[in-house]
Length: 282
Image (cartoon, rainbow, N blue to C red; front, side):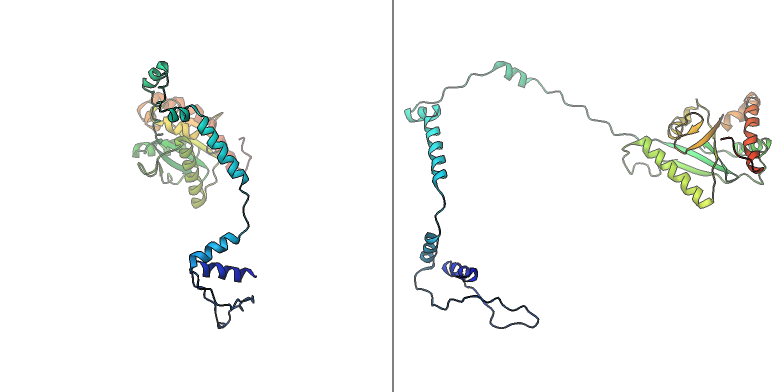
């Protein structure tokens, strides 16, 4: 018999009514042809017919199962606990390992929880000079510091109609919102994206960074880590770096201004060489 006829026999033996379509619906696939058994079912109960079908099925290999059951029974009956159970004896108490008990009684030292990484916090004032040099300052510049910066640039031979606008970069941009996984790397990526975005919008062609913070400014520790200055070059921004003291320290000390002039005289030729169309030494 075909599988369809066999399936119908099993369903009928279990007392389940099988339905077959008599009409073909529009756009429906034709019903597969098979040998239909039109013999009326016997009047025996469905349970007996199902048992008869199961009896007619080929017998499965039962020898491995019988062997495994016999082996399991022999093993269980020959075990000491089974013998004691048959004799009505209780199993002797197992010896207690005092050393193991004492060891387990000692409190297990718990691992100290790892403190979440704290993000870096800093504010950076950015002034782009002539779309070429990026002047960076820790914190926000006061009006006095801005005037001093304009005078210093003028004394260095950098003629500007007016000091460019100051752009503030604060990190993190949204405090207490996201947990920092790698604070230093995230801050470096954030600063790089900020400078690149500003350069694209304002058509900057950056050649150099002027860092007014020195090496020992306590307020610029995080900024120095982010800039990653090595061999007078910022590894984060991939630009050469000129370093000078903070503008606030220059406002308070005339000696600091005098000490700054030799460094400014060395910086001026780099600006003038670009204006004259000469190649930059960097």
